[in-house]
Amino acid sequence: MPIPDDVTGDEIDKDVRQELMSLPKGLAEEVARNLVMVANLLDEDPEQAYAYSRIALRLASRVAAVREAAGFAAYATGKYTEALAEFRAARRMTGSVELWPVMADCERGMGRPERALAMAGEPEVAKLDKAGQVEMRLVAAGARKDMGQADAAVVTLQGPELASNSIQPWTARLRYAYADALLAVDREAEAREWFAKALEADQGGMTDASDRLAELDGVEFTDAMGDEDTAEVTEPPAAVEVDADEEPAPAATEVESVSVEDVKDDKAADDKASDDQGSDDKS
Image (cartoon, rainbow, N blue to C red; front, side, top):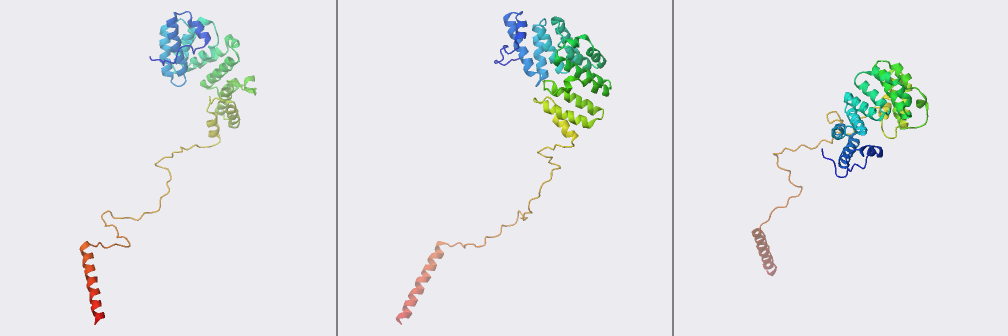
């Protein structure tokens, strides 16, 4: 697949670049460029990102960063079984637990929320950083909802991270999930409050909290262009109907056409009248 000339591969994270040093220089550069394309396209065109990830995987399947990138590309396209396999491979290579929450979410995507919930109780969760623990809490709450345990989902999301007034990268998503969980158990007033708090923290537009607030407030958005079939149109004043076959009315003043001969005849008549008047005067 083509890669733009301005993508050099130097754009990747230094830790990934370090991993690629185990490869021959030319191969490392090619893998790096494909990984850059995965990162660039993951949000806007997941299918294309997935295609580039498969190329990188074919070239360097023994590099953990490549397996992780392939996992996220598969995850973004809903290929949860494939994504889980890649995440597991990456984890075996690195021993890191940071992929634990997304692995649990793959279990949810595969229709196994009970497994996701079980993973939320494993010792690996305690080894996660704060962001990872919040992510695990979100996955566990989602698993509860999948299992029809809406009230339990509300309780799962409660904790010091939710109560904190500090704005973190995950704050908007946590507050949004809590508001959504409250709405699912008919606690609408509280849900509205938390959607507002989510909007307050959502600096990057990660959620549709503003739309959810408007929906709860009964605000309806209409298309500015309107519907041609239903839009009201102010009728213009009625125009005078004119028959296409009817001759146009003459102008108020019409000038009669005069030929040169007519002018000469009129002058001769005037001269004769003048001569006759002269003869009468002499008499």
